[in-house]
Image (tube, rainbow, N blue to C red; front, side, top):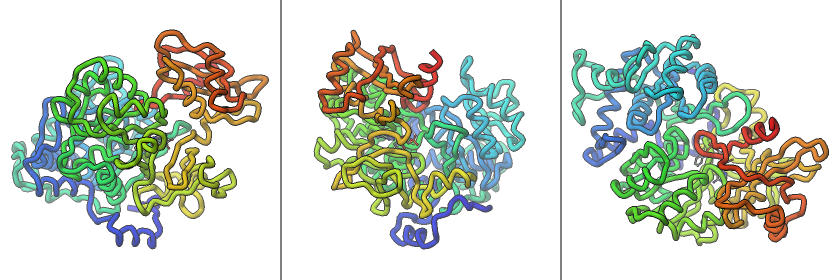
Length: 553
Ligand code: OOB
């Protein structure tokens, strides 16, 4: 198998091994070790299911055998598109154990996006769940399975209906393990292990993630067992996640934040318990926090206000919660300061990317750092640079593009050499496209995207900066600033506000911007009240869509 996109130079790889970052294990070995070390501890709580480490490991064995008997071979890609249910965790580890390469797809992806992922990865199978009505993923999955020549199997959690697919439950529960007769039931926590299944090696490709980038065809991010495992383990350590931790996944399970920051994989590597919340509403989540004594969970900023409001309104028992992680897009300072008092827990900001680099604020950072910065790189081997348009480092405190390389940051996209030439420097730094400032002590603040700016008559306005000013206005719950084509200005800036009650008038908006000492050209040209902002699958404001809608209007 050529894996030339996994191209850390050998010298660097040797260093990462020597320092113990790459430790020779596969991701499913982390789970196997958990079963050996603390087999009777609870690993996973999802819906009605409650699985011990031994029980989860046995199910993974069983499904890995089932997938292998179906003909899924080592190195083959399998698209995994499941909601927050236990089957996701079992399938993920079973694919890894079988040496197959899961391609993680958010449930919110449209059919065309899924098809494009399947084609790009040349997946041999799709795993989806039975759904309802128009959003039933079985229908597009069956069509894609027929249309894309690489696809040989469709596996459905629930009823395959008329898709011609295989029922997941059958594959997971009755496939024989090597050496067993057909149809034997799995001995939960029992001995037989997937001896005949050809697993992967630690530095092999483990999975493919979808880039958060919002333009063009999907870019696939290759992650190895060694690098992803390190990302998860180091994150668990940085976030205080150990065997007593109860981590609740409320964002989609396939997102990198919920996977390894420290997420599901980091928590299982540490011997803790993973709880899956079927949806991110505070009503569902708060009930689970109380019932399962959840200690840590993670949200995107768009969800935070409703959680804070609900906590103030209702008497749920949230006393077990120690850390609320927030990341995925910029958390404004005002909301950040409300988190601790409202939920009686620590806030941790997480600035991560599926491509690799994770930044965290530390548990012992002063409140000011926790509430106003997006943290520092996770690994002592993470290299970061903040550079200007010519690639020259900028002084501390000045904005520039963040470049990074390290033991868990990709060196190239999956089979995309041309793109790589643009997104990486010749010496292997990934150009994140994020505009940041870095303080003298190394704290990063995300001030925008290189492209998330309004170019108003040549003046560049970082959307995030103006959004921050607007969010500080009373009653403003959410704000998005976008540039819309304008015959005179090139682009004019439009602010969309979600407000409790009346929206601030132009004068108030003007004062909010100028009062912070910002230039007059940053005052939005237009302010509109909207009921809500369109969000992407994981809950980031969908600016592409906003721009499209505003320009079409
Ligand atoms: C996470 O991963 P992706 O791949 O969906 O998106 C990455 C991009 C970053 O390049 C940055 O533009 C933005 O999302 N971002 C943030 C942020 N965290 C991510 N922007 C401002 N403040 C933050 N705290 O979103 C992701 C992956 C792992 C952990 C957390 C988030």
